[in-house]
Image (tube, rainbow, N blue to C red):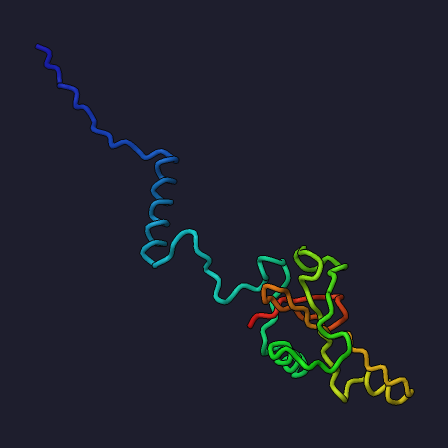
Length: 160
């Protein structure tokens, strides 16, 4: 007599596919992110923004400006009197460095050079005493303030 041994069926556990494994890893990463108190849409930067979103210009902190610029800002806040003829005149933004606005939106103010600056010393030596400073503060009607140390070769938004 021939006895047949019944065939034992193997129970195989299905292996996860590559897609299922990827979904599991992403879900785990998002879970850890949320448990860490982060919102997936927030910035993880350590400090304040470095660029003004409205103008695309870099920010300069108020405490990084020279003393003469701080003094000029105080005069602007007080409404004058200004030491330089022409202070408060319309800045026309011909360089196109600032956001486009209607004519008359921006005003400019000269920031004096320090007395010991090479430009002032050279003027005194040759007798011209021009003292024209390339440093300016530009103020928009919305209260935004900009700084140029170099006659509009560069411009930065003042962060107050």
